[in-house]
Length: 318
Image (tube, rainbow, N blue to C red):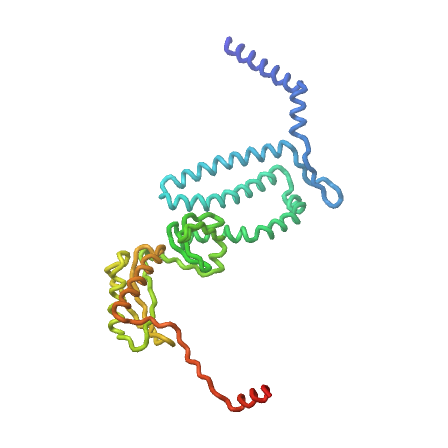
């Protein structure tokens, strides 16, 4: 009996509080604020099709905040066992998918609240077209960035050459790829260039690369001696691998020289200019010591004396 009396008292007190809240002017003002019409959509006959109220906006905000919490939880769950490199790629792709999910949740939310989505798109059709045209290149970069991350054609640390520019990849983002050139300059590459230009990945097959130095010698030189000197010059650099050994190729009979190419393997192709410079210094020194000449381009000019031209000049003198 006492428990029933206590329950009845609590129920009566709750009803009194509810009635007091309902009768208070503050509650009425709050309800009026929630039902305040922000914007009204009408059709061609001026009939109301949809109404945006404050409570709808607040509810959509709550839904988006809840979606944010869910997405963060999913991201942590998916990336907790991934390596750091794969985790960075997943986060980049996930950041793009997150905005797509937000857009879908937003449209579903306002449609569930009775707001005609078609009317919203019709009212902002011109704006959406303008934004789409302005952001065309941006979307190309984003789609290209997703392709790069999925097919893994480029990794962080790779040395790439695109549009005549060479750099070591430092960061792959959704819109751009950041690389550092040999001169320590930051190269920002829009990702859509990967679809429109040929990309050379110097180190996808490994960090070691095959480099070459070209040189020409005068006609009449001992080609076997030239081959021996070029191999000696290549092996003199501490950056050149002993295995595989350097090789010399007799490439062509040029206009003014016999052309040779010495090929060698190094570890760091990004700084290939250093061993190439050392080998060129060694080639010049060895050629001088062994009287091997590096010719410069030569042209023979033949002057033909024409008697008619002499007569014409004599007539002009008279």
